[in-house]
Image 1 (cartoon, protein in one colour):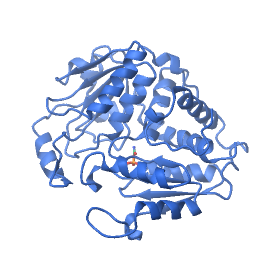
Image 2 (image 1 turned 120 degrees about the vertical axis):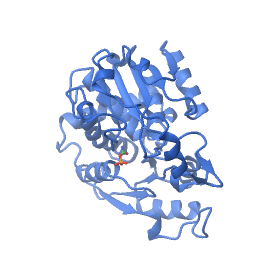
Image 3 (image 1 turned 90 degrees about the horizontal axis):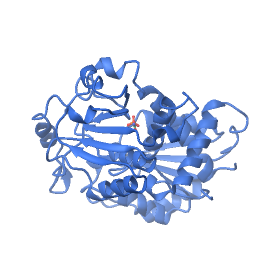
Length: 345
Ligand code: CP
């Protein structure tokens, strides 16, 4: 298996063995975090982080990861340059990608739905960067996918259902039920993390139940891939439209708000309209009472959490909350991704 030089834009682009190899390296790096084995993998190398949208976890974990691999993370925003977009003239993606690749061992890009004129345009932009850049492009969250989050998620679920921190058991996920529930709230959130989670869960043989109000369907192509992954693994995929029944027998509960498929109009995301629309659906919140319907499930969320809307404090800060472990895992999986795609291992 050769991952050197590869892009990571969606986990679906990598084979199962490639995903497992990355996760195994991440677990080794977690168990032995400051070993000399990792400290020179990206020595004297730079990773450009190009952020169209803000971030806490992604920026901090990539920066910390580059420090721990002996390299440097360079922060860049579109306002620091003159980049061509649907609204302004400027530098093309071809020119930007080719120039950045002259400086960097790899390029991470974050561009979410509020920075693009239509759904999927952010993911298309990353793939255009990948076409022109001669170095790996790592998706730091676009409007369709968040693969680094997905790898951190599945590692955390396999730790909690396995032997604990740094000792994930991916076999333990097979046949387990993941509930992916829409969450109430006024944040008009992206589809990327939820779609990334359903893709990775179905690759690892989990049964996937989606719960959301009528009218909140996700990307039909991603749903189709998820169903195919489930079929290959003899796992179930189901959709329910009430906020309670999906919890029955769940082993992993994920609750997050997302925008409707009608979010775009006239070439931009109508955020205020989406917030007002979501206000009709109060009560889609993960509570202690709902968690009691599960099979002792863990609670998972990519963060930032909208406490009080998506989940109560009792659950988010409770004894079965995996959120901080998963946030930590961002560091370990990203170190493994960069080591394998850009490093001297
Ligand atoms: N989960 C995640 O990507 O967090 P940030 O938006 O803070 O980077």
